[in-house]
Image (cartoon, rainbow, N blue to C red; front, side, top):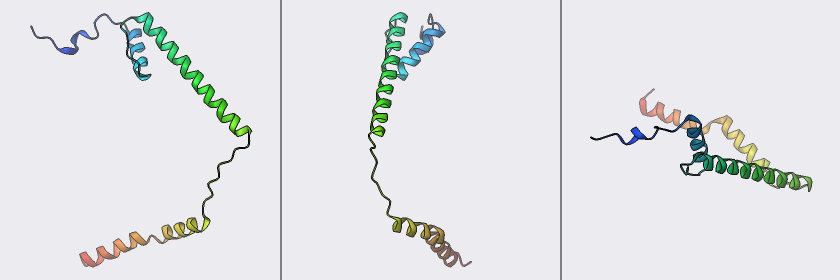
Length: 105
């Protein structure tokens, strides 16, 4: 007798273990099939993530405490010229004029 491939996947797995498997997949880990082992691996992955985030947060705070400043100045003349061109809408006006000529409006 032929059975569907996915028909036996959900048999015998409770909702909590399904949640554990989804969370393991979100961390890029594959479930081992043992609920307690997977729960421990998930907790370890979560604590590693928290530690990594705290370390990144401390690094960013220390760089701000040193007075590090990003030096990317915007050229004001280019900004003014670009804003004037956007206000004039030259590209849209050219397309409109060409459409008038082409369609005889």
